[in-house]
Length: 265
Image (cartoon, rainbow, N blue to C red; front, side, top):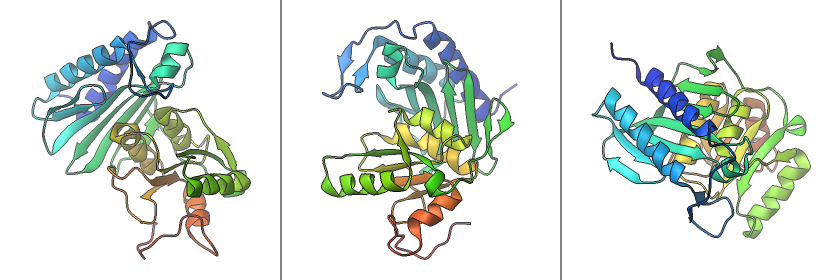
């Protein structure tokens, strides 16, 4: 019997997690992508990506695949977008801010996602128009206001306008930083923190697409900055609860004014 795409993605993520957790805190760096301490790769990153690609292809060979480590293997309008270990540097050090992320993209839209915190066994899932779940139970974002908020902010502080924005947000809320997209998206979707803001961030499509759908399906607002819509190829975005979205985009001197009139409901 053929399983659904979401069931397959969950099963494969958990299988990958069973392999990864055995090596948690006990693996060596094999390559550095950049001078940044977090941009590291291990042999396990590549092995797990190959494993995920192989298992997903067994499910449906017609679906393409694009992974962080080895790139696009099969081009298609419908493809899996995969980060085998989001937070490799944390994984190496034995810090539990690391996840496996799988999204399914169709016609430039994220239609399902799975984020698996394999250390804590927290399995987040979302399907477009079908809600978000944690270990099978429905979850939703918080309704806290900006003054009560914990926000994750990813931005290049070497750019002056970004530094000023960061300082403004820091005055209005508490800024948290785990340096891990998947882990933070799970916290937002389950109402533990209030949002993630990316302005000139350092990540790629696979870092943000899975979590964007998860937060949206958990009742949050995910929009590109200055817009009232979301394109996963645009990495400047807000992923926040509705109350904070209004506080950040409306009123006098909003930090993130929208430039069109389409409303978020």
